Length: 165
Image 1 (cartoon, one colour):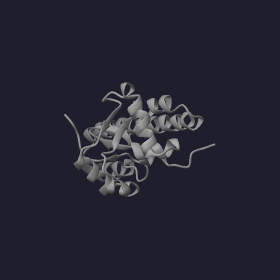
Image 2 (cartoon, helix red, strand yellow):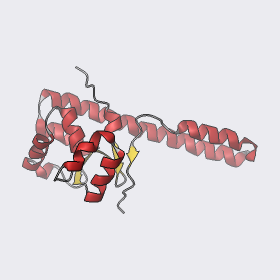
Image 3 (tube, one colour):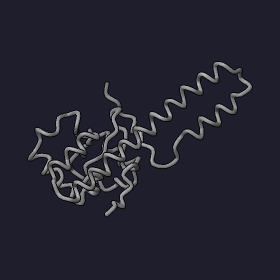
Image 4 (tube, helix red, strand yellow):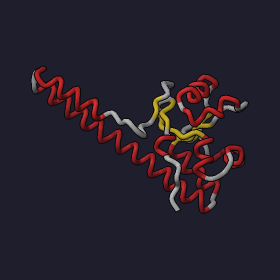
């Protein structure tokens, strides 16, 4: 049974990390956000700060503004939780249902796919820089066109603009 949720489009970049919000993970795992957060609360020792963190009020407003599917969070009294790849995997261990196991595989694959995409494009960008240095400005238009093609139009992680550090 395949999941119909486009997981890659639900992975956001927040505080310099790729994350998924509790509401999106609950949807993927087939449970309510409340049930997901209760399971996390019962197993909080499994979710250190590098696996999960709460959004600030400012971050919450930003994701609601930038992500249409998160509009319902606008009226939530609680701050959403953000799960890193490791936190999303840990949820499967906490939830233990057959759906959670299947969903965790899909989540891991989505994170890996995005990581590979970023690495592949980073390598290509480096090669383009070398070529630009080697050849004069006559090929600038070509290099600019290639860079434009490297920008993903669908399913790229959304950079929310909040970085710690």
